[in-house]
Image 1 (cartoon, one colour):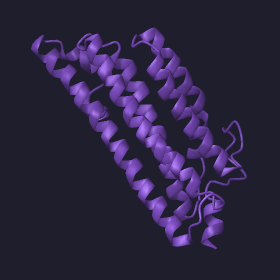
Image 2 (cartoon, rainbow, N blue to C red):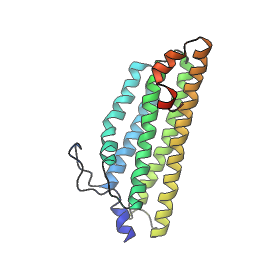
Image 3 (spheres, rainbow, N blue to C red):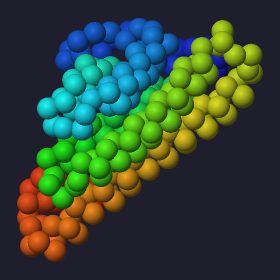
Image 4 (tube, helix red, strand yellow):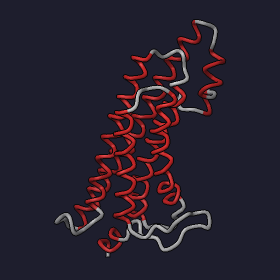
Amino acid sequence: MKKKILIMALLVTSLSANAQFIVNDPINVATSIANTAKEIIQTSKTVSNTLNSFKEVEKVYNQGKQYYDALRKVNNLVRDARKVQQTILALGDISDIYVNNYKLMLQDKNFSLEELNAIAYGYTQLLEESAGLLNELKLVVNPSTLSLNDKERLDLIDRIYIEVIEYRSLVSYYTNKNISVSYLRAKKENETQRVIDLYGSAPDKYW
């Protein structure tokens, strides 16, 4: 029974009226989202770190965002399927934190070009590691690819879920620390309001 549940993990026959499409194949959905993350990583490594060129990364992110948005609309999943869903959505959160915050950092004069390059490298490394876990999850939810019993499969899903959630926390922490560097530099120049206007106030953001 549990094997059937896992095969059906993200199987959905209908979504809300706002959804553009129907999610009906969990393996293809996971593959599409993993490919989006891979494209973001590849594009990040090839564009120069300027606001105009980073729009290519943002474009890739926005194109794949439809999968995350549709997946968020799926309700009433059993516990194990919910964990698979939340693992995939956590990768979407990582992409979201990276793209949206780094775009702001590119507008922040408190960072040098060298620092922006280093920050971008850190983000892509973290996204690459977490995307690799999603590829592993894709294999786990497909019983034809691994000779695992139900308990082993559930244990793997739990492990991957925990690791991806940890990466999401790490990306948030990484973002916080970078923004706090900008804030401290701005404070020395009595320009903290400019940083707050750019990133938002502390209660609204990650820092």
